[in-house]
Image 1: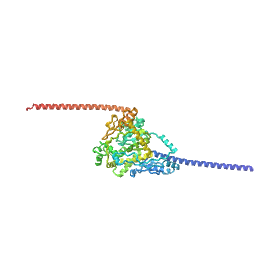
Image 2 (image 1 turned 90 degrees about the vertical axis):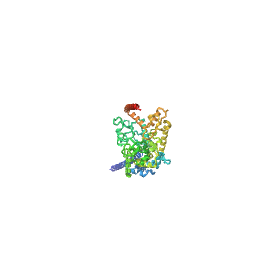
Image 3 (image 1 turned 180 degrees about the vertical axis):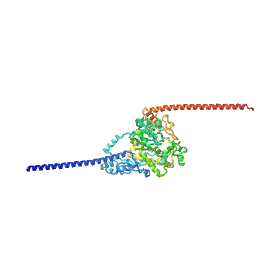
Image 4 (image 1 turned 60 degrees about the vertical axis):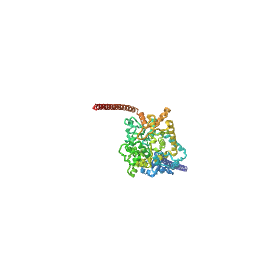
Length: 569
């Protein structure tokens, strides 16, 4: 009996011990699950924050983004903004570009914060607003690319994980082949057009070309998708590049192009731009009756009438090209409101705005954003005026141009500032300077290889008539002569670099629509032949009329002489 009781007691004790151990194991497992869940939540928050910051780095940096990025990255160095009055009209923009609440950002783990602060430990102050000096603009002097005292970025050494990230980004960079370029007037946009033409031509991409071989997309009418050849007939399934002159309409353009299309354009200082516009479009009603811009402004622009066709070139042409209302604001408050709307609309529709005064820097930035090569963006200046057709403007006239084109001036000021912020966030001054030098060395090598004399010549000196640029207004548009000893491949490369806009557009149209081009050529020959016949008939009729008049006059003269001689003396 005692033995049985003892055995039962031991069994109870063992059973109890097993139960306790089981409960402890279950509890430990539950604690592990909870800990794992918390870790996963932290990791998820960290990854989301890193994704947001990575997106901020790669996306177009906007004015309000810089303040938010500074808060996220805990950057101690200040980023210099432009003058306050240049940006005050951008207040109240949509803040949805910076997702995530303050509470979410505060939940990011300490590890992630240390990682980010180590990457962005030293960000130098930059000169955000590199506007041309008024006197230099008036004299046509180009600013240096980077000031001598421009700070250099002190980059921390890369860790193994950083090196892996950089390598991964290089591998995953894919060239953008769906591109819309809004070609603005007198902004070096013809050179950009040639770059896009050459890239699409050599990569067999499809261009959205104007209907019926026109050179422009029915400018100044608002763009419509059916202005493009192949849309109505549905003969083209996909368009890659849209880049001819048009008045922008976001809705119509997006009907035509895929969702992943990259939109960009270029601006120029309105002072230098209006001097060029005045010479090139001297025949428009606003400029026709005056001899100079000084005279135009001395008359307070009385010859300008916004409702007259052609006069869009005379006032706020950039705003007009972007498809917006270019009428001049009448008050300061209206200017602030209208300019804010213009800037917000352009910033919404375009991922990148280049600056003509910093053309080489713009090409380097464009190369990186599009993931193209240095060869892709190498170029010669096209549709450029001869120096002797340029004239300096006084400081007073420069100020009056800014006031006259107040919307364009605000637009230029804002995007000139954001351009340099984009440079700093994408490349940095040191890398920018290095790549600009490489680009210029490449251009110089191409000039020596391709061109007679190594540069541009006046139109009368262009030997190949098929390569003569179109002349318009009072401007003298320069062209190029190719060297004679080039082999076939080199000649093809060089000829693409110097082919003017109208000729290249026609060649691409013929390449994409050979049957339509052939039919148009036949029709053009018939029209030319009929005109020649009509001209010949007109000339023959004129000759016959003149002969008849001469015979009649001669007969009348002879009769008069006979009558006089028959009179008695």
